Image (cartoon, rainbow, N blue to C red):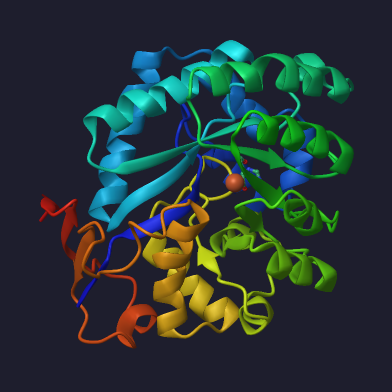
Length: 345
Ligand code: NIG
Ligand code: FE
């Protein structure tokens, strides 16, 4: 079967070093928030990125990009967010730019300076938000290093008011918007994303009924990450079926990152999406192609195979569409083409 190249609309691929120790800690009962409160979690990756040079980060990123392509993903959205200083955020985005210049994978860069409050500003969130809106966002926009700005809107990171300041400034500077919304707690992140007309609201494990309505009215694409609650051992899952039934164009993503999902295989996310949310094969395929492309402002060029669009496609060892989530756990990709050129197989 030939399908459009997969589009992964939510990844955090610029990091140095892995965090398998936290996976083990959660196996023994620790929670994501406990690990984060102890200075692990995102902040442990921040220490890694701050200590790494552009060359070192690039050397770790490039094999990850090869792996995305080998797994059938031809476009990724890629966030910064493990630097959390002006210099280290710019460095992360420069690494993405350098990678995009030499690698066939298409990369859509997102500034996620609002991923967490770094150690030097803990307890002074508004001081860090000042830095984001007065220094970091203007520099990112001026150097055209990102297409989107994302915020991790959560009680322990950036609350609704902090997030509003960041999103307003980003919008003023001409960046598109994405929001990590209602992942760990029901804060009204989906409503916030809708209020700003964000391109996407991501995660949504704790989305409310009014949040679903708001996304629909705003045309904001829900980007779900079905592998993450599994890895974090959270029972709460996004109401994917309910959102699809409401008429929302679901996208499925890996959320590839060193903490909450060290998996680059979008087909794996698709399988879990199908199983956990009760999505059909056609819904799943659309969720990893056209809907994801639309959430990245690339729906007119990517995401389907039709005359006039870019020839990004994947040859899968499957007999028909209904086998898409049914046949899993073995290598399915037999070849990958980007812009009409064979890049894998
Ligand atoms: O999408 N939610 C915030 N960011 C990531 C986790 C990143 C990390 O733990 O390093 C996520 O799950
Ligand atoms: Fe994320």
